[in-house]
Image 1: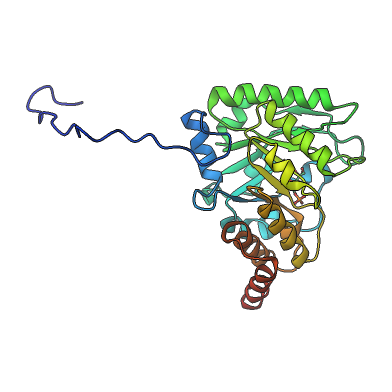
Image 2: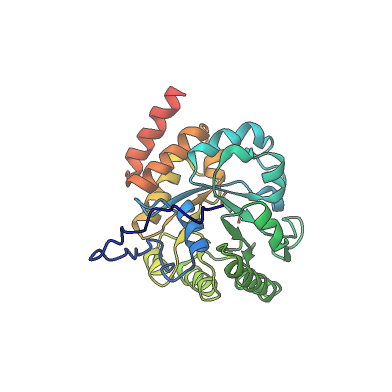
Amino acid sequence: MADAVGNIEAKEYGFGIEQKSEGFFVKGASHLGWGLQDRLRRIFNPVSGNTVMLAFDHGYIMGPTSGLERMDLTIVPLIDYADCIMCTRGTLRQVVPPTSNKPVALRVSAGTTILTDLNNECLIDMEEAIRLNASIMAPMVAIGSPEFEGLTIRNLTRLVDMGNKYGIPVLGVTAVGKDLVRDSRYISMASRVLAENGAHVVKTYFCEEGFEKVVAACPVPIVIAGGKKLPEAEALGVAYRAIQAGAAGVDMGRNVFQSECPAAMIQAVGAVVHEGLTPEQGFEKYNDLKASL
Ligand code: R5P
């Protein structure tokens, strides 16, 4: 308890020096509260403005896909190289060491798998996200799905309400769907709908034509999913073109953990995303690291 007597009198008031009021570097986030900004700052690098999220939540819809059979062996060694990790609450508790100290994009929607219909989902409890110290909450949103568009937008809306209440941002994930056409018209609409409904960050797919328009018309940062495994040089090219078009990073899974050398690949992706390496330079870095590991 502070002493009641004998305290040094306050005198350093800094008269003439204005109290700093800093702006905030994440797109669309200048007017957010402290907790939301703090969590976004943990995800996005303030120097590059970008992020490399390592996604390994695939098992919740597709089971133990290649590279995720033993996540303790394949994923845990990669965590240090990521800016943020994206996974389910099961994986977080079962496999990810709490000492990792990485911001977590927590998969907070759960439901049907690739064996039936995707995207028939519910949400986990908000208290779970708080308990697990999520830095951002990631629900699937199935724009254009005749069956599940309404349900998944309601899920997003509820999460945004709760996230704003507790200071945890929402990463709206444009859903994978069997009939999805990944062109700029669709991706732009889906991304914009997520942002308008309050998502603080949008995760979507890259398209070669018109991606800069997708980014321009989305008032929050876009991170791209990597998609199916490509040769390393091609995947680095996708990351490069997405960043050049204005994306704020990648949320990449299979192109990292299914790579011939995942540790080299995630570092090469990081150099493209944060340092602006060209795909050729990135691939050279990948090969150099691969040879040294
Ligand atoms: C799908 O939404 C999953 O949540 C994955 O996190 C996402 O697709 C990113 O992984 P990948 O780069 O393998 O597509």
